Length: 578
Image (tube, rainbow, N blue to C red; front, top):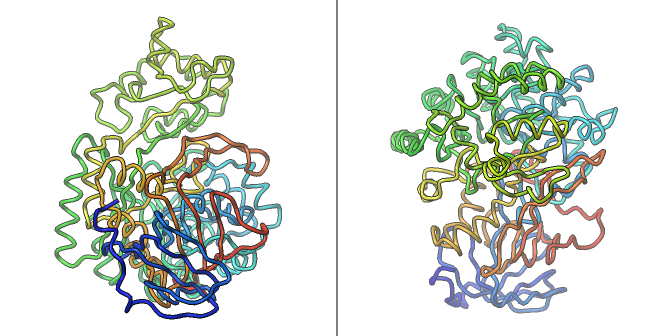
């Protein structure tokens, strides 16, 4: 912890309060603003913080936080719980790690609006681009979705309730599909279609969407290997939809960038429509060592000119755990286009081909200029049916111990196990010196947990406890106050989320109490708790003493408190709870 965190708050800040619901005493208060921490108390009543400092008077419950930190609840701006919220109102695993508010609908994806005849297409797109199990989606959403329009979707979330607060972005892909059907994946839109989409975007904002999201990432392929619908949008369409979002009251635009939607285009949209834009994601190693610095410099120049541009960064290596029937890390490579277009048996035939294997070796060699270059030397075998002793050991080591080339070994193991064998390696963001440069740049915003997506491939929903345990305590890269600001007030303010992200009188009582000496993200575990028993990776938290949402205790010592149907989260329409 920073040496600044042990003074006693002046008594004048306190207020005598009677009959509080909850009083937290003697903790180190770090209020989210970046200001130095101090020893003090927090009083909570009727879902709000009513006193910070020296709190006197009685309370229904008192928590002694001696030796612990009292901070605002964490705000995760980049999640994909759009479908999961329908069947998992706890939105696990985010609250385990202190997240009390999440933003869904990122990257232009979502499940609303969706006509009944487009449901399969939307689920198949999520299966492909976000690594979600189609069977789990179909089972979890049911045969009769409780919504069609975006407004009905918002109402369905609110009626069901959630453990944590939710803000929703209106995604470009379902909107485009709703208007254009299958043509959404084939062509640009005509004027009438753009007008219809714009009207839906405006209505979504009026129904409470916090903003609009889109993607033109070349890695975003939908069902059948086709580009996701948002990638077919030209700047005329993009301009009209951002204009409609702003007209409807949008607070933010979120974009996943691509060759035709990057610095220049995003800056133009932001300036023309006077709206903040956050883009995903500025990562170490995107185009080779040091490549992040030119994007940082471009961002600095744009910000100096008054452009409201906020690249998102991540504090964890972007690892992917995959099997070769769905080789997500390689799908960006032209060599794998044939894989994406083939069925499972066709893929097996291609993988057996010596010519493909030779091309695969060349395309991903250490000196190749792409994100998967040298993957072999970063890869471990994560699942080896019949040979558990190989698991979590380097692929190269096991392959060479059997006298085989690593790519031959990986593909042979995949074929022999009918694609059950799994592998894991970091694609980007694994150079810690470069990641530290990104985390220390105040022009950037912490995001990209991707919670709810790629569930069987990665788990970065634990980013908050990793930041506080690894980058603050273990590495000393960030001061504790700085890190908490990055997790709380800074993202809340950028996204227009009101009365959250700070510990202050009248703010909503979203609070995390944690032990700075032990807080950490645990090792990844594979569980089978999604609908139909589909698997996902999870990470347990340590050091989290309590998570409080809107004044109600949600988690205590990593356990859900009380009745499973007690769901204190609120739907944040336009950034505020009703």
